[in-house]
Each structure stands twice: as C-alpha cells, then as structure tokens.
Image (cartoon, rainbow, N blue to C red; front, side, top):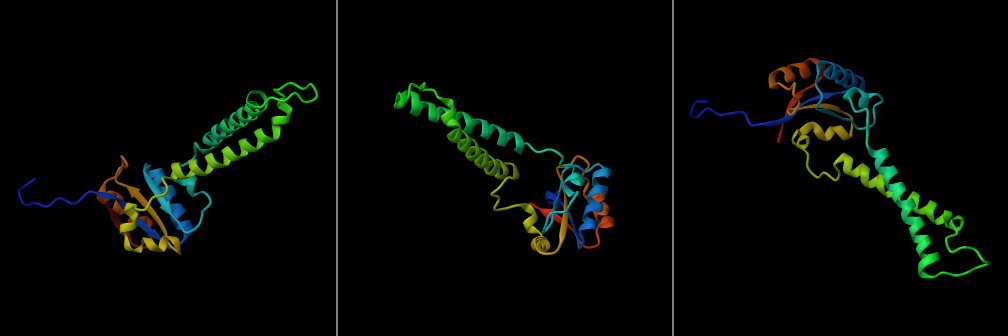
Amino acid sequence: MAFGQKTRPPIYGIMAEFDEPHRLLEATERAYAEGYRRMDAYTPYPIEGLADALGKHYTRLGWIVLAGALAGCAGGFLLAYYGSAVSYPLNIGGKPFNSWQAFIPVVFECTILAAAFSAVLGMLGLNGLPQPYHPVFNVPRFALASRNRFFLCVESRDPRFDREATRKFLEDASGHEVYEVEW
C-alpha cells in the first residue's frame, strides 16, 4: 500500500432492506444456497421458515433445561431428605426417615422451578442478551426493523464474504437499499 493511501475501514457486514417478509425469506434461501452461512435476519415479528432458511436447525436450550430440571430434582430430594432424616428426624407411625413418597411434592416443585429458571437464563445466554449495542444499530433505517421493515445482514466473518460480490448479490435480491454496517 502506498503512503497516504486510505484503506477502507473494516465493516461488520452488508445489510439489505426488504418491504415484505416473503422477499426476505426468498433472499435468505438464495443466500444460503449460494454458500453464505454467517448471516442474520431482523424482522418485527416471527416469519415461518426463516430459521430454517438461515440454517439454524439446532438449539442447546433443551439440554440446558434438562440439566436444570435434573439439578432441581436432586436438590429437592436432598432438601427433603436432609430435613426429614438428618436435621430433624421424627419417628411417626414407625415409618422410615427416608420416606421418599412424602418427598414427591417438594421434588416436583423444585424440578419445575429449576427448569424454568434454567430455561430463562439459558435463553438469555444463548441469545447473547442483554446486548445494549450491536453494529447493525449504526444503520439509520434499522430502527424500522421493529415496525414494518425486514433486514438481512451477511457478516464479514463469513468465509464466502467478498465486499463487492456480496453487495451485488444483496442488491439483486433486495427491493430497497443495501447498507454497509460499520463497527
């Protein structure tokens, strides 16, 4: 690079704007077919088939909830056992201290509580929330993503990403503007 020559600043990606959800879905399917994998879509409401078009087929949230439920079940049983057999044992009607049938309501409630907490915390963690800043917020028209516009952003980290080729691809697919998303 010659002295004094300016380089283009690195960008987060290139984003296209759409007015209708089916156009966004078609463009996303085309982008996935072209080999783009690091992309995301932004819509004001859920669109059926968009997650599949983006290639997001699997989530670990179910396993996180299962682990939370099992931990809650074990914790609830240990809580009831400790209170009944270790901390304050009472011989009532000749029953054993470890009378697990009496523990079922406590164990069930602790299982549900821990599963619910792990679902909420797991969802927040996997979604990367709370996220007070994201590079797509630098695009002025992105505020319409919560109202009536649809956006598809191809990230520069994508192995297939080429600044000019990706811009041309999104311009052909979009009915509106295409923006460079800066960091």
